[in-house]
Every structure is written in C-alpha cells, then in structure tokens.
Length: 334
Length: 273
Image (cartoon, rainbow over all chains, first blue to last red; front, side, top):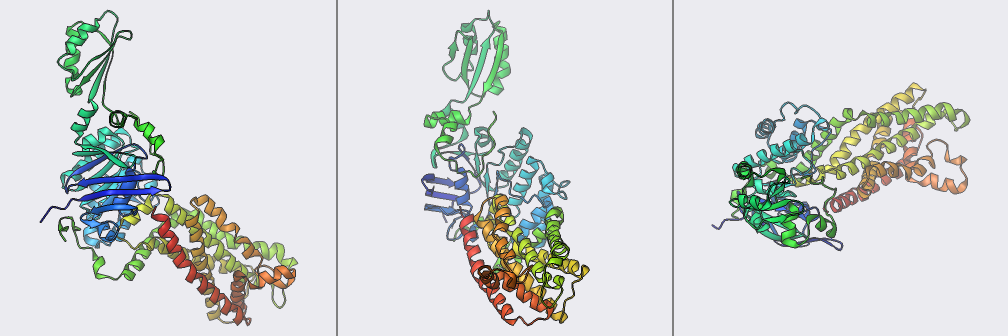
C-alpha cells in the first residue's frame, strides 16, 4: 500500500475575470507534517486554502485532500478537515461554549464524545472562564483561539490555518504558536499560510513560497534562509573607534562579505545564529576597544525572501497582483 | 480506498440518516442559534413589535376619523392591512441577516462543515417565522385594545393568522433573495423596504380601493399584497371573500415555488466564490 499524501495539488488554476489568483499551483504535503505557505497579500494563499477546503472549485487541475477529490468527494473531505483563519469565523452573539456547541451539532457529532471534547478544547485553549461570555466581548487573541478550537471539534486529521496570527499582538502570536506546535506534535497534518518568514520558520518543517498564484520556491526554513542570506548584524561605531579593527574582531562570526560604510561609520555583517553569539560579539568588540553607538540584529524578512527569489519585494508584488483577500489583512509591523 | 489513515476519529452519525433528515435537523440548529440571539440584540425585535403598534394607533386615531368604510368600523377594516403590512415589514429583516451572514467569515466555517448547505438559509427563515408569530400576537393585542371586534368564528381568526404567517414566509424568502444579491447589509435594510412601499400603500390596506382613481385602482385591486389583505379581512370579519382567498393562496404558493429554488441557486453561486 503506497502512502497517500495528506494534501496533493497539481496544476491548480483559478481566475477571477482577468486576475489569475492561482496559475498552476503544485503542492504535496505528507501526512503528519506541517507545510508553511509563505507569501504576501494577493499571492493566492487564501484562494489555495479555499480550494483545498472545498469552499471554492478550481478552474482546472487536480486537488486531493486525504486521498479524496475536493470537487467530487467534497462531503467526505469536509468530515476530515478543519479550517481556521484570519477571519475568526465565530458567532459574536453567542458565547464561546455556544459556538462550539453550534459547530458540534452542525458537524453531526454525537453528543457525549463531542461535549467532552468541547470542554477539553476550552480548557486547553485557556477559555474556560470566558466560555460563558459573548464572543463580542473577547479580545482578538481569544477569538482566534476559539476559532482554532472550533476547527478542532471534529478532531480532524488535516488542519488548514489561513494566516492564524495576522493582526495579533506578540503575546497572542506566541500563544497561537504553542497551540499549533502541540497539534503538530500530536500528528495532525497542518497546512499553514503566513506572511511572516519567522512564523513559517518556527512552525513548519517545509516551506513553499507563493507568488502570483504559483510556488516559486520550496524547501526547509534553513535552506530558504541560506538562500536569502540569513541574518545581518548592523553596527555603527563611535568616533575614535577604528573600522578595520572592528571588522577584524568580527571575523569569527561573519558568514559573508562585510559591508563597510566609512562615511556613516557603519558595518553590515552577515551572520548565522546571531542571537546566540551576540553577547560574545559585544565582549570581543569591547576587548578590541571599539565603542558602538548602535547595534542591531536584523532577521531576513519576507521582503528579503522575495527580493532574492523574484527581484521584487513583497510589497511590490501586492501591487502587481490584484488582492484576492476579501479584506485587507493587518499590515506587518517588524 | 487507501485513505483509512485520514478517517474521521469517530463515526459521524450522518451515514445512518437521510439527507432530508439532516437538512431539517441542521435548519433547526441554525434557527436555535438565531433565536438565542434575539434577546442579545433586542432592538430588532422591539422595532418589529413597535411597527404594528404605531401603524394601528396612527391610522385608528389620526386618519380613522376621515376615512369612511362601508359596512363596518374603520378599525375593523384596518386590521387586515395592519397584519399583512407588519408581517411584510418584519420579514424584510431576513435579508439583512442573510447579508450579515455572508459578510462575516462564519459562512466559510459553515461551508467547511459536513452540514446541509441549505440549512444556513432555511434555518434563518424558520427562526424569522417564529419571530413573526410574536409580531402577529402583538398586532392582535394592540388591535383588540383599541376596539377591534372580529366577526365570525375563532377558527376563522386562526386561519387568518396562519395566512398572515404564510405571507411573512413568502416575503422572508423574497427578502433573503435581496440579501443574497446586495452585498452590504445596510443597503439591504434600505432597499429591502423601499420597493415594498407601493405594494403596501397602493392596496386595500388603509382605504377601500373604490376611493382610488381608476388607473391606480386597477393595480391596487389585483396586486398580490391587496389580495392577501382582502383574504385576511374576509376571514377576520366573516365576509365572503373566497375568490381573494383562493387567489392569495395561489400567489403565496406560486411565489414560494419560484423563490425557494431561486434563493438556493443564488446562495450557491454567491458563496462559491
């Protein structure tokens, strides 16, 4: 018996008038793995999720989820998947518990098992105290956690998360990450879309970069970062500190050519594992009698990835491809 | 089939029941959700209740003295119009709710579940039907308070109320169609009412059509809302109106036969984008 991939897409196309939301998308997600689909607004991520979750029919191409055709076997697919996303699809005028009950009943689950599961989910997602309150009183993070809980009511083996942390604050994002990692550890196959390289890096073993409705790069987070050039250390030296001495002191840490701007007394140093070495770097510079006025460790952003892979930034891509998202996602702030 | 590895973890009970069973069961679940929300946004129900109260009081005391109707008191004449008009206006809320459902991400969640797709519409309309029973009771109460004296049998009054409820069902499906075609709930609230006004006022609701100029009379006499009002009036006042009743029922049945499949079709098109 050959192993069936959890998600399989081949040459999937979807157009809205003249806009090609998907222009030949190919994907394979092995059972039990986490795939992160990285791309800017309008790249086609949401369209891909909507097709994979049977909400939208592709114009052409083959799409199988759990070994089932999403068009001809849509009902069977729906019994095996969960969907949560940036729109936090929960009813504001119901309580948290009522929301889970609603989705449990509409999933045709028997009461006993599902009731216990609803309680477990509320507990796991830290919503027990809020369960009796109307969702309209919830914070953004709580809504997103309830949305994720709702998507798990069927205990799906394949979970789709469409930008699960867009618009959340740092704390909310970290909580969601921990919950998603728990699910991945328990063996759930996860297809995740995101605009944050950091998020894909953190959660997914395998990353696909999507641009203009197509996969333009595939690989592990590390491979992708190596391609982009990893992190950069940005230093500005105080007057009186010699630039060449600093460059020499940084020698052991750099992973590429050091960029020197003499006029601004600025150094740009490509590094790997910069955060781990930061303390040592500062100590070494201090020992070499170098005084800094500014020091920053910059991680590669989505823009860096896009610049490397496509020659244009994510923001430009957004302008080129008409956005297929139905409402603008909150802008990235990094 | 080698997708056993992705099999649902527990047996869905769906397999043991028919599609019709789930279409109804899911509609009841969606309707319960709607009803549970009523006390949480009380303004909608209050508006729906105030509507017949204001119309009855306004026409009874402000215009009633100036309008003569043959054979009965003005309040007795007015009530049929008040019943049908309140039911029609209350039904206009259905479209606003449908537009709201479509606007929020909730519809995607519903569609990603193994539920009967029709239940999103039928459940809402079922809930609105229950709410309209309440509106009809309020209309009865205000009418009786200001001197309405129905004639005939109790059974006929029940039949009249049932007919009003049927009319509200027809207009709920019509309103749902407006909600499906116009994306903004605010616009639905406006547009859902305006085009109904000629049918409500150019009718036998508040004045006998015999007082109207002949060109308007031709429309007012034969348009469906008038026929529905005439049929209700016949039942409430024990007047022979079997032709109006028969025509009203044909209109209601015909409109439902067209509207329900049309709504479902438009719903499918609207959501699969």
